Image 1 (cartoon, one colour):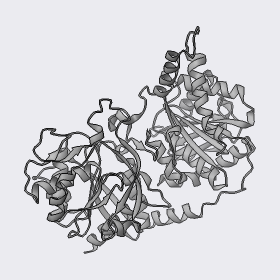
Image 2 (tube, one colour; image 1 turned 180 degrees about the vertical axis):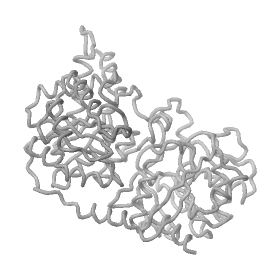
Image 3 (cartoon, one colour; image 1 turned 60 degrees about the vertical axis):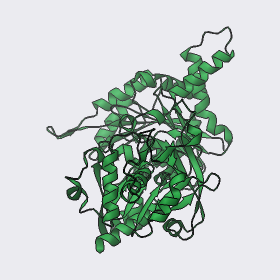
Image 4 (spheres, helix red, strand yellow; image 1 turned 120 degrees about the vertical axis):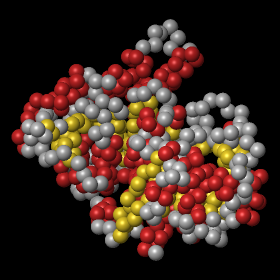
Length: 536
């Protein structure tokens, strides 16, 4: 069977959930026995989101092979349970960089380089690239932005050309749109959807299925009206209604018949029905918790929940594994101080200090860590959170009052967190951090080993600064143990305090590998420790 292609576009408004619809369809097809992957095409001119502020674009998701990608790739991995790669996220910046590099090398000698055909040809090449490996039956491509955006036009033009070039049963287009509820009138309005589809059709792209995001059920009359005015087959207008969990959406899409429409259109040979045994078992635990805990997530981008999307999802997975509802309370570290510390953290069953960059909000993170250490509250620090627990320990236990990270003060007399040696000559910011999966060797007499049950683990990284090894002996003597190190470089990856009920910091990002069916071990253990603390 040759590779088939599905394109998912969006209209009316952003944040309708194209990534969730794409991931849900992929999950449905995977559960029918098909080999599926998803790729995201983003219209911004940044080469990748690695240099973007989280307020701009949510978290930057990192793959095993070191790609800094859109957060939707996290959804893809969590839904499918398979690893994405650099090839799964393409931006306008990457497209133009490739074309301009080829032009400088002389690939287009004598030609005027234009959006059509040069840019669109490169977009099409990237869209079909994964299909040439022969590893996939279906490739789903999510196009970022909304129809009508100037930045998205070359992507839509590329899809138009592919619809024209390829056999009808090798390609299809799904358009996600909004059917808003006007509460004053008590009506669902279809006009925004009609306009959105008209704009898509003006770009030459014809949708085969329209998915309507809605707060209430669409009547048969509304579905028929949308199908008629948008020129799609009757029955090919389906709803995506608000769900209690994103992991419910594949089941909702199955009930709407999305997978059957795709299988029939693309003439796919697969199982007649998807197998959702594991997903339903997960949802049963998620919806029926036997206990409840409160966790403080201390960070400096808390106004935007997408900034910590993978952490929040990891708590969902770990909560279900513990049959426990995890209430995550976001705490803005910039506004945390001694005057509101007890009021803010006193009722928490666990404290997680989140990743980040820069000086803003660091002192708030440090006092939150000190509170967790001194009050025996379960603590978990990730990346910058781990680095700040090292700084806090140096200041308050080792007595190095001026201890800090070289990121904050490169001339510090006690840089317990220092710039990595191979970063000191780096001047380019984009794509130059320590990125991707690296091995870590665990001390067999540690909490980390107890959690993982394995001596060698592999986790993903995204950082420039590291634990300063010249201070390691002093830390070990004072009670902070380096329980995980890179086997090749000796870089400290995990620190813990054995005398504390649960105190662990990781230089890596464990949240990036958590899925509903394989929850991340540290998160599972952290939630279990918080449950124990709550009950005590």
